[in-house]
Image (cartoon, rainbow, N blue to C red):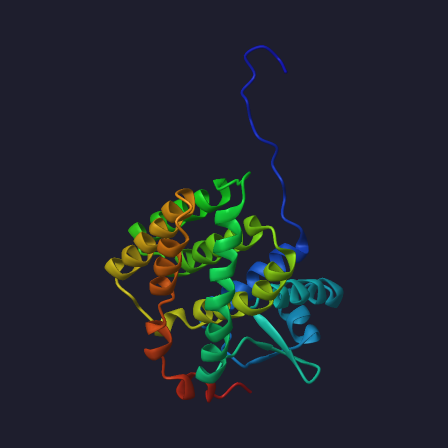
Length: 231
């Protein structure tokens, strides 16, 4: 490097697939795409001015992240009934407790990812950024599953939970928790993190259970959301 040259990071341009991914995801988060609405490669390609292959790649990524679902060879914006949400939580809670036990018992742990995700949650809570808060919340839990280092447990949680967060983000305009609620949830995640550091599994379990807040779904009029005219 030249003497006196600024220490700059390399600029990484997003791929076309990533731009399409962000465009579809942002439209869903703004409510322009509604839960259960069908998405077609040809329709999206025409609207976005890109090739169908690029749209296909973006939809594959969106499905992996929980924002869309495949139903009878159709791709739709993720939609969950209350029964679906209850069924996911019935599995999620004991599985995440088990992940906490694996993580607390590991000797060589790296909690940096958890700490960064928590910091993002705290910042989003202070600013009242709901979608950013939910994304940081998911990142926190994803780091927990990863650092537990049980790939079977991680695989099960990654199949179940992201669609739950995605549905929450897609329906976020119908659920408006105040800043105090976001800060309360953030504090519970701080307790989870501190309990992991102290290897206090019982305290981590307790904080995790309380943090599994489901008031957002109780505030939704799901029949109204899901019965909208999607033609």
